[in-house]
Image (cartoon, rainbow, N blue to C red; front, side):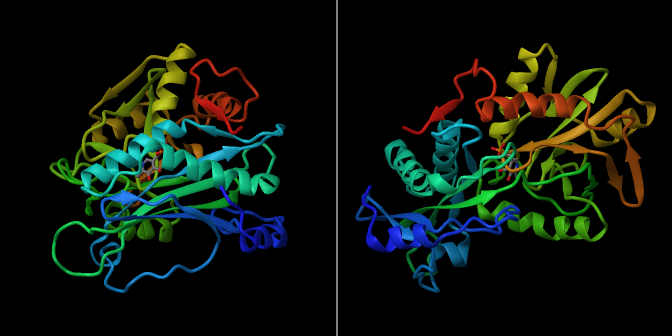
Length: 348
Ligand SMILES: Cc1ncc(COP(=O)(O)O)c(C=O)c1O
């Protein structure tokens, strides 16, 4: 893909700061392609910066937007690699399908990712746990209030050199009141509406000193769904349990990787309905020894306790199984270990 003088200048001027955080530092380039007259244009690399969007654009008025999150790694390697990008590509197509938006075909998705990663190659941070976070997204650009899909879309990829998302062993707050996603709704799609629905609960959880909210099903407020940006696991009697997917839970790529890897390491993994009160009882009795969350950003986040209002339910161990799985997964992602599942794709 052509590197224009403006893009080359933006790359040349960029300096990687010492402190990266997660999303605080923007890579100096971005990809943009447009859908018009029923087809995608070829797209181009641009310097990172503001974009023209009509105030009436359907993405702004009705949340007609789907996105993805994945990482490029370059730890101790000269060529960067992606991790299960095909799964993110498929999920963005499924998310677009749920909102009946124009899907981004595989070639355009991978072409855009590879163009951005190659342009950013020299400053992909290279310590273990660090990476270049990639955020592909598609949004409806047509202005108007009619409740139907936009006829024009924009597909973009922006990127951020990042540290691993969270550190420490935080508690999470069970959200008993608000609902994030209902069966039949858009919970399984990675779309803005789900995050909007979770903001009040998540903000309140953070204000009370917890990392994030843990969501329950919309119909009975009884069964665990997931966290605002991660899937949930519990270790019960030495076996792994995670909520079974339904149309209200995001099918996490990390969740699927953890299930596959855990089985490979000899763990029994159950995907089932998980009653929150039963889980709290099992934490109390010690049968549930540990809980953790997982997602691309944090990889695996050990959880120290589930907070139910002011009651803190602490597990008897923290980060034992979680750290074993995290290290096994990260070693594959960073190409420090063999990749028996063919998950890693080196960018040529
Ligand atoms: C709501 C939600 N659940 C789960 C996940 C984990 O998904 P993945 O492992 O694909 O990053 C994410 C992160 O993208 C998320 O936003």
